[in-house]
Image 1: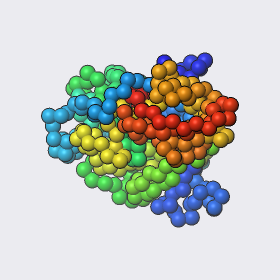
Image 2 (image 1 turned 60 degrees about the horizontal axis):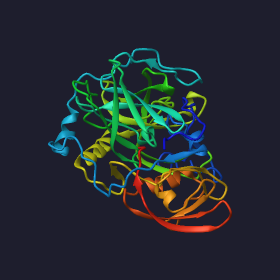
Image 3 (image 1 turned 90 degrees about the vertical axis):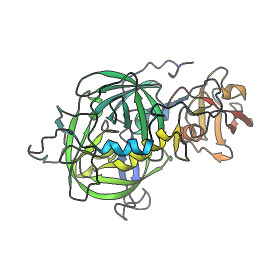
Length: 408
Protein backbone atom coordinates (compact mmCIF):
# COMPACT_ATOMS: atom_id res chain seq x y z
CA UNK A 1 0.00 0.00 0.00
CA UNK A 2 1.06 3.58 -0.48
CA UNK A 3 2.18 5.98 2.20
CA UNK A 4 -0.76 8.40 2.23
CA UNK A 5 -3.38 8.47 4.95
CA UNK A 6 -6.84 7.36 3.71
CA UNK A 7 -8.63 10.18 1.93
CA UNK A 8 -5.87 12.72 2.52
CA UNK A 9 -3.94 13.91 -0.58
CA UNK A 10 -0.41 15.30 -0.32
CA UNK A 11 -0.26 18.93 0.75
CA UNK A 12 2.37 21.51 1.57
CA UNK A 13 3.13 21.70 5.27
CA UNK A 14 2.42 24.61 7.52
CA UNK A 15 5.12 26.21 9.65
CA UNK A 16 4.67 23.94 12.64
CA UNK A 17 6.87 21.66 14.68
CA UNK A 18 7.57 23.73 17.74
CA UNK A 19 9.07 21.96 20.71
CA UNK A 20 9.45 22.55 24.43
CA UNK A 21 12.96 22.29 25.75
CA UNK A 22 15.08 22.85 28.77
CA UNK A 23 18.61 23.95 28.07
CA UNK A 24 20.36 22.71 31.18
CA UNK A 25 23.77 23.37 29.67
CA UNK A 26 22.75 26.86 28.60
CA UNK A 27 21.17 28.44 31.65
CA UNK A 28 20.60 26.43 34.79
CA UNK A 29 17.30 28.17 35.54
CA UNK A 30 15.71 26.93 32.34
CA UNK A 31 13.74 23.86 33.36
CA UNK A 32 10.67 22.07 32.11
CA UNK A 33 7.27 23.69 32.39
CA UNK A 34 5.76 23.04 35.78
CA UNK A 35 9.06 23.36 37.60
CA UNK A 36 10.08 26.87 36.70
CA UNK A 37 10.79 28.88 33.60
CA UNK A 38 9.92 27.19 30.35
CA UNK A 39 11.82 27.47 27.09
CA UNK A 40 10.42 26.75 23.65
CA UNK A 41 12.26 25.51 20.59
CA UNK A 42 11.33 24.79 17.00
CA UNK A 43 12.87 21.57 15.68
CA UNK A 44 12.98 23.21 12.25
CA UNK A 45 11.30 20.21 10.70
CA UNK A 46 9.51 21.34 7.62
CA UNK A 47 7.21 18.42 8.02
CA UNK A 48 3.99 18.86 9.94
CA UNK A 49 5.71 17.79 13.15
CA UNK A 50 3.02 18.93 15.56
CA UNK A 51 0.16 18.36 13.13
CA UNK A 52 1.15 15.31 11.12
CA UNK A 53 2.55 13.24 13.98
CA UNK A 54 -0.58 13.91 15.99
CA UNK A 55 -2.75 12.81 13.08
CA UNK A 56 -1.10 9.73 11.64
CA UNK A 57 2.22 8.15 10.77
CA UNK A 58 3.09 5.39 8.39
CA UNK A 59 5.47 2.48 8.78
CA UNK A 60 5.20 0.69 5.47
CA UNK A 61 5.79 -2.96 4.80
CA UNK A 62 8.32 -4.59 2.54
CA UNK A 63 9.92 -7.92 1.94
CA UNK A 64 12.03 -9.21 4.85
CA UNK A 65 15.71 -8.93 4.01
CA UNK A 66 17.43 -10.22 7.10
CA UNK A 67 20.00 -7.93 8.68
CA UNK A 68 22.39 -7.42 5.77
CA UNK A 69 23.59 -3.88 5.25
CA UNK A 70 23.00 -1.85 2.10
CA UNK A 71 25.94 -1.73 -0.27
CA UNK A 72 27.53 1.69 0.06
CA UNK A 73 29.27 3.83 -2.55
CA UNK A 74 32.81 4.92 -1.70
CA UNK A 75 33.78 1.39 -0.64
CA UNK A 76 37.08 1.93 -2.43
CA UNK A 77 37.93 4.89 -0.19
CA UNK A 78 39.26 5.01 3.33
CA UNK A 79 36.45 6.80 5.23
CA UNK A 80 38.76 8.52 7.72
CA UNK A 81 41.17 9.84 5.09
CA UNK A 82 38.32 10.86 2.81
CA UNK A 83 36.50 12.83 5.52
CA UNK A 84 39.71 14.54 6.62
CA UNK A 85 40.28 15.67 3.03
CA UNK A 86 36.94 17.50 3.02
CA UNK A 87 38.36 20.40 5.01
CA UNK A 88 40.24 21.82 2.02
CA UNK A 89 39.18 25.49 2.04
CA UNK A 90 37.81 27.10 -1.14
CA UNK A 91 35.18 29.69 -2.02
CA UNK A 92 32.46 29.74 0.60
CA UNK A 93 28.93 31.08 0.93
CA UNK A 94 28.74 34.80 0.13
CA UNK A 95 27.00 36.71 2.92
CA UNK A 96 26.67 40.50 2.88
CA UNK A 97 28.38 41.27 6.17
CA UNK A 98 28.45 44.99 5.33
CA UNK A 99 24.67 45.33 5.29
CA UNK A 100 23.16 47.09 8.32
CA UNK A 101 22.44 44.62 11.14
CA UNK A 102 18.86 43.66 11.86
CA UNK A 103 17.22 45.89 14.44
CA UNK A 104 13.80 45.95 16.05
CA UNK A 105 11.49 43.47 17.72
CA UNK A 106 10.40 41.51 14.64
CA UNK A 107 12.28 38.42 13.51
CA UNK A 108 15.02 38.97 10.95
CA UNK A 109 13.57 37.96 7.57
CA UNK A 110 17.09 37.45 6.24
CA UNK A 111 19.00 38.54 3.17
CA UNK A 112 18.76 36.70 -0.14
CA UNK A 113 21.90 34.64 -0.80
CA UNK A 114 23.01 34.66 -4.44
CA UNK A 115 26.20 32.57 -4.15
CA UNK A 116 26.14 29.48 -1.96
CA UNK A 117 28.46 26.77 -3.31
CA UNK A 118 27.44 23.34 -2.06
CA UNK A 119 24.09 24.27 -0.49
CA UNK A 120 20.92 22.32 -1.32
CA UNK A 121 17.20 22.93 -1.10
CA UNK A 122 15.64 19.70 0.20
CA UNK A 123 12.08 18.56 -0.61
CA UNK A 124 10.56 15.41 0.84
CA UNK A 125 7.43 13.38 0.18
CA UNK A 126 5.75 12.40 3.44
CA UNK A 127 2.56 10.67 4.45
CA UNK A 128 -0.09 13.20 3.48
CA UNK A 129 2.30 16.14 3.27
CA UNK A 130 5.35 17.63 1.64
CA UNK A 131 8.38 18.74 3.61
CA UNK A 132 11.26 21.12 3.00
CA UNK A 133 14.67 21.83 4.46
CA UNK A 134 18.27 22.50 3.51
CA UNK A 135 21.38 20.37 2.91
CA UNK A 136 25.14 20.57 2.42
CA UNK A 137 27.12 18.99 -0.47
CA UNK A 138 30.33 17.25 0.59
CA UNK A 139 31.57 15.63 -2.62
CA UNK A 140 31.51 16.33 -6.35
CA UNK A 141 29.59 13.09 -6.91
CA UNK A 142 26.77 13.98 -4.57
CA UNK A 143 27.45 12.94 -0.99
CA UNK A 144 25.55 15.35 1.27
CA UNK A 145 24.29 15.84 4.82
CA UNK A 146 21.14 17.28 6.35
CA UNK A 147 19.22 16.82 9.60
CA UNK A 148 17.62 13.42 10.07
CA UNK A 149 14.35 15.08 11.07
CA UNK A 150 14.23 16.71 7.62
CA UNK A 151 14.03 13.31 5.86
CA UNK A 152 12.58 11.15 8.64
CA UNK A 153 9.48 9.16 7.57
CA UNK A 154 9.85 10.39 3.98
CA UNK A 155 9.16 8.12 1.02
CA UNK A 156 11.10 10.29 -1.43
CA UNK A 157 13.85 12.91 -1.17
CA UNK A 158 14.55 15.43 -3.93
CA UNK A 159 17.26 18.08 -3.74
CA UNK A 160 17.96 21.19 -5.78
CA UNK A 161 21.44 22.69 -6.08
CA UNK A 162 20.81 26.29 -5.09
CA UNK A 163 23.39 27.90 -7.38
CA UNK A 164 22.44 25.99 -10.57
CA UNK A 165 18.84 24.88 -10.09
CA UNK A 166 19.72 21.29 -11.02
CA UNK A 167 17.52 18.70 -9.33
CA UNK A 168 18.42 15.21 -8.11
CA UNK A 169 16.77 12.31 -6.36
CA UNK A 170 18.63 11.48 -3.14
CA UNK A 171 18.93 8.27 -1.15
CA UNK A 172 19.40 8.20 2.62
CA UNK A 173 22.56 6.12 3.12
CA UNK A 174 22.47 6.28 6.90
CA UNK A 175 21.42 8.37 9.87
CA UNK A 176 22.16 9.16 13.47
CA UNK A 177 18.84 10.00 15.13
CA UNK A 178 20.54 10.90 18.41
CA UNK A 179 22.68 13.58 16.76
CA UNK A 180 20.00 14.38 14.14
CA UNK A 181 22.23 13.87 11.11
CA UNK A 182 21.36 12.05 7.87
CA UNK A 183 23.84 11.19 5.12
CA UNK A 184 22.46 11.47 1.57
CA UNK A 185 23.66 10.29 -1.82
CA UNK A 186 22.45 12.27 -4.83
CA UNK A 187 21.79 9.96 -7.78
CA UNK A 188 23.80 10.40 -11.00
CA UNK A 189 25.52 13.51 -9.68
CA UNK A 190 28.93 14.61 -10.94
CA UNK A 191 30.98 17.77 -11.06
CA UNK A 192 29.12 19.42 -8.20
CA UNK A 193 30.46 22.38 -6.28
CA UNK A 194 31.00 21.43 -2.67
CA UNK A 195 30.60 23.45 0.49
CA UNK A 196 33.77 24.93 1.95
CA UNK A 197 34.27 23.51 5.43
CA UNK A 198 36.02 25.34 8.26
CA UNK A 199 39.07 23.64 9.73
CA UNK A 200 38.35 24.68 13.32
CA UNK A 201 35.50 25.37 15.72
CA UNK A 202 34.05 28.84 16.29
CA UNK A 203 34.46 30.63 19.61
CA UNK A 204 31.98 32.75 21.60
CA UNK A 205 31.65 36.19 20.05
CA UNK A 206 32.46 35.02 16.51
CA UNK A 207 30.18 36.27 13.74
CA UNK A 208 28.09 33.54 12.10
CA UNK A 209 25.24 33.33 9.62
CA UNK A 210 22.67 30.59 9.17
CA UNK A 211 21.84 29.90 5.52
CA UNK A 212 18.70 28.06 4.48
CA UNK A 213 15.41 27.55 2.71
CA UNK A 214 13.36 29.60 5.19
CA UNK A 215 9.84 28.18 5.56
CA UNK A 216 10.25 26.33 2.26
CA UNK A 217 10.39 29.55 0.25
CA UNK A 218 12.36 27.89 -2.56
CA UNK A 219 15.48 30.07 -2.37
CA UNK A 220 18.21 30.75 0.18
CA UNK A 221 18.39 33.52 2.73
CA UNK A 222 20.86 34.19 5.52
CA UNK A 223 20.35 35.48 9.05
CA UNK A 224 23.36 36.84 10.89
CA UNK A 225 24.29 36.61 14.53
CA UNK A 226 27.14 35.70 16.83
CA UNK A 227 28.14 32.64 18.80
CA UNK A 228 26.76 32.82 22.34
CA UNK A 229 28.22 29.58 23.63
CA UNK A 230 29.45 26.07 22.89
CA UNK A 231 28.61 22.57 24.12
CA UNK A 232 24.97 23.41 24.82
CA UNK A 233 22.46 20.67 25.66
CA UNK A 234 18.72 20.86 25.09
CA UNK A 235 15.78 18.59 25.85
CA UNK A 236 13.09 18.84 23.21
CA UNK A 237 9.72 17.40 22.23
CA UNK A 238 6.98 18.33 19.78
CA UNK A 239 4.32 20.52 21.33
CA UNK A 240 1.68 18.41 23.06
CA UNK A 241 4.00 15.39 23.17
CA UNK A 242 5.88 13.64 25.96
CA UNK A 243 8.44 12.37 23.48
CA UNK A 244 11.45 14.37 24.69
CA UNK A 245 14.78 13.94 22.98
CA UNK A 246 18.18 15.28 23.99
CA UNK A 247 20.66 17.02 21.73
CA UNK A 248 24.09 17.71 23.16
CA UNK A 249 27.26 19.56 22.23
CA UNK A 250 25.42 22.25 20.26
CA UNK A 251 26.60 25.70 19.22
CA UNK A 252 24.23 28.43 20.42
CA UNK A 253 23.85 31.64 18.41
CA UNK A 254 21.52 34.62 18.48
CA UNK A 255 20.66 34.26 14.77
CA UNK A 256 16.90 34.37 14.08
CA UNK A 257 16.68 30.86 12.67
CA UNK A 258 13.21 29.73 11.54
CA UNK A 259 11.77 26.48 10.10
CA UNK A 260 13.39 25.63 6.77
CA UNK A 261 16.98 26.30 7.84
CA UNK A 262 17.15 22.72 9.16
CA UNK A 263 20.13 20.84 7.79
CA UNK A 264 21.67 23.94 6.25
CA UNK A 265 25.05 25.48 6.99
CA UNK A 266 26.01 27.90 9.71
CA UNK A 267 28.96 29.75 8.24
CA UNK A 268 31.68 31.99 9.65
CA UNK A 269 32.72 35.42 8.38
CA UNK A 270 34.64 33.74 5.54
CA UNK A 271 31.63 31.73 4.39
CA UNK A 272 33.10 28.46 5.69
CA UNK A 273 30.73 25.92 7.26
CA UNK A 274 31.16 25.59 11.03
CA UNK A 275 27.89 23.84 11.94
CA UNK A 276 24.63 22.33 10.70
CA UNK A 277 21.51 24.23 11.79
CA UNK A 278 19.21 22.01 13.85
CA UNK A 279 16.96 23.94 16.26
CA UNK A 280 15.81 27.34 17.43
CA UNK A 281 13.96 28.72 20.38
CA UNK A 282 10.46 29.74 19.40
CA UNK A 283 9.18 33.24 19.78
CA UNK A 284 7.68 36.19 17.97
CA UNK A 285 10.48 38.69 18.56
CA UNK A 286 14.14 38.69 17.65
CA UNK A 287 15.22 38.78 21.28
CA UNK A 288 13.32 35.55 21.98
CA UNK A 289 14.93 33.46 19.25
CA UNK A 290 18.31 31.74 19.42
CA UNK A 291 19.55 29.31 16.80
CA UNK A 292 21.39 26.06 17.57
CA UNK A 293 23.80 24.17 15.34
CA UNK A 294 25.46 20.76 15.33
CA UNK A 295 29.26 21.24 15.22
CA UNK A 296 30.79 20.32 11.88
CA UNK A 297 33.09 17.69 13.38
CA UNK A 298 30.08 15.86 14.85
CA UNK A 299 28.33 15.81 11.47
CA UNK A 300 31.47 14.60 9.71
CA UNK A 301 31.91 11.93 12.36
CA UNK A 302 28.51 10.53 11.41
CA UNK A 303 29.47 10.65 7.73
CA UNK A 304 32.65 8.71 8.46
CA UNK A 305 30.72 6.14 10.51
CA UNK A 306 28.16 5.62 7.74
CA UNK A 307 30.82 5.30 5.04
CA UNK A 308 32.63 2.71 7.16
CA UNK A 309 29.49 0.57 6.96
CA UNK A 310 29.49 -0.09 10.70
CA UNK A 311 26.25 0.39 12.61
CA UNK A 312 26.31 1.46 16.26
CA UNK A 313 23.69 2.07 18.94
CA UNK A 314 23.00 5.46 17.34
CA UNK A 315 24.07 5.11 13.70
CA UNK A 316 21.79 3.12 11.36
CA UNK A 317 22.61 2.17 7.78
CA UNK A 318 20.10 1.14 5.14
CA UNK A 319 16.39 0.55 5.64
CA UNK A 320 14.65 0.56 9.01
CA UNK A 321 12.48 -2.20 10.37
CA UNK A 322 8.73 -1.65 10.08
CA UNK A 323 5.41 -3.07 11.24
CA UNK A 324 3.45 -1.78 8.25
CA UNK A 325 0.91 0.38 10.08
CA UNK A 326 -0.39 3.92 10.13
CA UNK A 327 -0.78 5.34 13.63
CA UNK A 328 -1.85 8.36 15.66
CA UNK A 329 -1.70 9.29 19.35
CA UNK A 330 -4.62 8.15 21.52
CA UNK A 331 -5.81 8.59 25.09
CA UNK A 332 -4.60 5.19 26.32
CA UNK A 333 -1.83 4.40 23.84
CA UNK A 334 -1.10 4.68 20.13
CA UNK A 335 -4.09 4.06 17.87
CA UNK A 336 -3.74 1.96 14.70
CA UNK A 337 -5.33 3.85 11.80
CA UNK A 338 -4.51 1.45 8.96
CA UNK A 339 -2.68 -1.85 8.46
CA UNK A 340 -0.86 -2.86 5.27
CA UNK A 341 -2.09 -6.18 3.93
CA UNK A 342 0.50 -8.92 4.43
CA UNK A 343 2.63 -6.79 6.75
CA UNK A 344 4.17 -7.85 10.06
CA UNK A 345 1.30 -6.16 11.89
CA UNK A 346 -1.31 -7.86 9.70
CA UNK A 347 0.19 -11.28 10.37
CA UNK A 348 -0.24 -10.98 14.15
CA UNK A 349 -3.77 -9.64 13.89
CA UNK A 350 -3.41 -5.89 14.45
CA UNK A 351 -6.42 -4.07 13.03
CA UNK A 352 -7.55 -0.45 12.65
CA UNK A 353 -8.93 0.82 15.93
CA UNK A 354 -6.59 -1.30 18.06
CA UNK A 355 -4.46 0.56 20.62
CA UNK A 356 -0.76 -0.37 20.97
CA UNK A 357 0.46 0.06 24.55
CA UNK A 358 3.92 -1.57 24.64
CA UNK A 359 6.78 -2.96 22.57
CA UNK A 360 9.07 -5.57 24.14
CA UNK A 361 7.65 -4.72 27.56
CA UNK A 362 8.32 -0.98 27.25
CA UNK A 363 5.37 1.40 27.31
CA UNK A 364 4.86 3.55 24.22
CA UNK A 365 2.81 6.07 26.20
CA UNK A 366 0.55 8.03 23.89
CA UNK A 367 3.32 9.12 21.50
CA UNK A 368 3.14 8.00 17.88
CA UNK A 369 6.66 9.36 17.46
CA UNK A 370 7.96 7.22 20.32
CA UNK A 371 6.44 4.05 18.90
CA UNK A 372 7.76 4.86 15.46
CA UNK A 373 11.32 5.25 16.74
CA UNK A 374 11.10 2.17 18.98
CA UNK A 375 10.35 0.15 15.86
CA UNK A 376 12.58 2.01 13.40
CA UNK A 377 15.60 1.62 15.66
CA UNK A 378 15.38 -2.15 15.18
CA UNK A 379 16.85 -4.13 12.29
CA UNK A 380 14.91 -5.71 9.48
CA UNK A 381 14.32 -9.37 10.35
CA UNK A 382 14.48 -8.73 14.08
CA UNK A 383 11.74 -10.09 16.33
CA UNK A 384 9.71 -7.80 18.57
CA UNK A 385 6.76 -8.35 20.89
CA UNK A 386 3.79 -6.02 20.55
CA UNK A 387 1.12 -5.59 23.23
CA UNK A 388 -2.18 -3.99 22.31
CA UNK A 389 -5.82 -3.60 23.25
CA UNK A 390 -8.28 -4.58 20.54
CA UNK A 391 -11.20 -2.39 19.56
CA UNK A 392 -13.50 -4.63 21.64
CA UNK A 393 -11.30 -4.38 24.74
CA UNK A 394 -9.32 -7.63 24.53
CA UNK A 395 -5.65 -7.47 25.60
CA UNK A 396 -3.30 -9.27 23.20
CA UNK A 397 0.48 -9.74 23.04
CA UNK A 398 2.20 -11.30 20.02
CA UNK A 399 5.70 -11.64 18.57
CA UNK A 400 6.41 -10.67 14.97
CA UNK A 401 9.35 -10.24 12.60
CA UNK A 402 10.03 -6.72 11.33
CA UNK A 403 9.97 -6.11 7.61
CA UNK A 404 11.77 -3.50 5.55
CA UNK A 405 10.38 0.02 5.65
CA UNK A 406 9.95 1.93 2.43
CA UNK A 407 10.13 5.24 4.31
CA UNK A 408 13.29 6.78 5.74
